[in-house]
Image 1 (cartoon, rainbow, N blue to C red):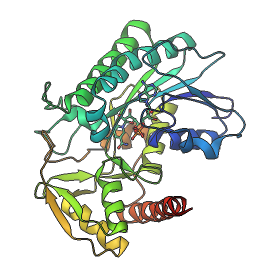
Image 2: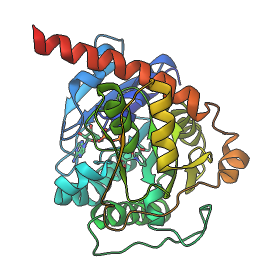
Image 3: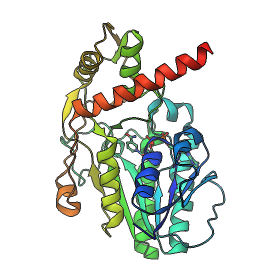
Image 4: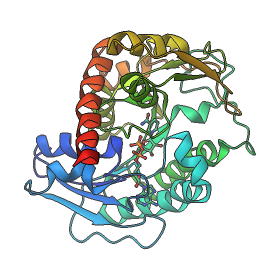
Length: 321
Ligand code: NAD
């Protein structure tokens, strides 16, 4: 990656900040573009001052200008947590549509490789299990989650059209639930919520009866998969996720055990259109990118819990002082 200049939209978010760090470690120059809707300059604060790193406050749905050459555009700008995109429905649709249009325009102008962060949510509430890239999905186009799912489906279509019509070197990665250090304790996703509740002794809120399944992938693995796609010329779409599937109740119980918590489990109402099952078929990623996840869920959860412990201790100390 030495000599490469990468632009990462949404670079101050959870995944974006990890991508910024890994690319800098590999010798690339990195421009992080973000409007800080759900991300924060704090997420990349530790990277400030590193050679080649720049942060630009910018809303991708408006005019986008980056001076000089760019070799890679990673388009990650979009809310990703259901709580966030339900709070920001129009912004989410605009990030997936106008934001993707402008990020593709930038890649075209610079003759750069372009990678779209798509999602397992394009499969909706899947009727095929596990999900292969050939599955077209089962999305309710007027349900509350559609602002995210349909925006990403449109973004995939737009990315494909730019490849076909303008010859842009595009890749589409369908990311499955990713977790790790750097997530916001209140971002509403299952892993940070369960860890925060376990560490603070609050009840662990499991939606429905908790039999719905998820497959969680540690952030370092997801970043490796995204960068393997970026380094190739493969169009995808390609699933990146960890096939180790577990029920949401199992996830809650695992986190409670790993934190040594006594928090009770409380069953709460299940959100509308919440998928019943989720597990990636990752054989395409293995075959085309030589990628497979390496961090098992317990190891990844222990690392994440250790980070959250430090984070929550820090916010307690700040509240006292
Ligand atoms: P995040 O909310 O932490 O990060 C998103 C970032 O995009 C934030 O920093 C936010 O401020 C920024 N952003 C939003 N709208 C913008 C706009 N119009 N202009 C500029 N910046 C904007 O979410 P995340 O978990 O890091 O997800 C990043 C990307 O990866 C998203 O595109 C998401 O759809 C995709 N993804 C994530 C997961 C996951 O499990 N984390 C799974 C599938 C797909």
